[in-house]
Image (tube, rainbow, N blue to C red; front, side, top):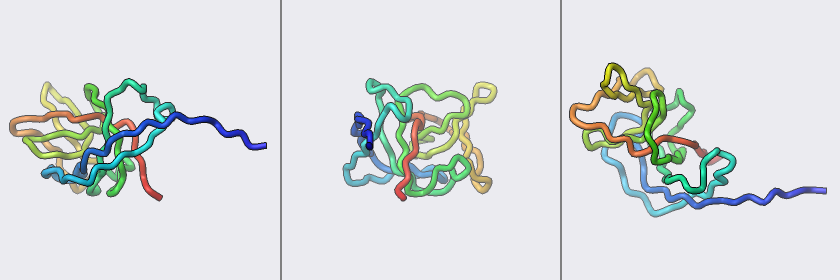
Length: 134
């Protein structure tokens, strides 16, 4: 006998791309959605979330690859969180850190330098899940 568990999937909008490399302008993509069972990733159905496609390889040490889709939650970032951020108006996907009151971003690939904003750092969302096509 096979038992099927009923799942409650939520549709999350894929709002564009985020560069996992040096900060750059985000590219528009055709509107898409990803269906996610929120209970499997520990997110409340009332959470504010969106998704982005990843372009680049600066986060390979965090197992986020070019072509992956990341689901982000709109919430404050904690030290070490993987975030989508606007750095001086350009978008990137990196780890967020705060040292001596100064925010900066760090890649998970040794060829990329730390990023310290010249003017502004805006956290767009905190990564709560990564999906990969197989």
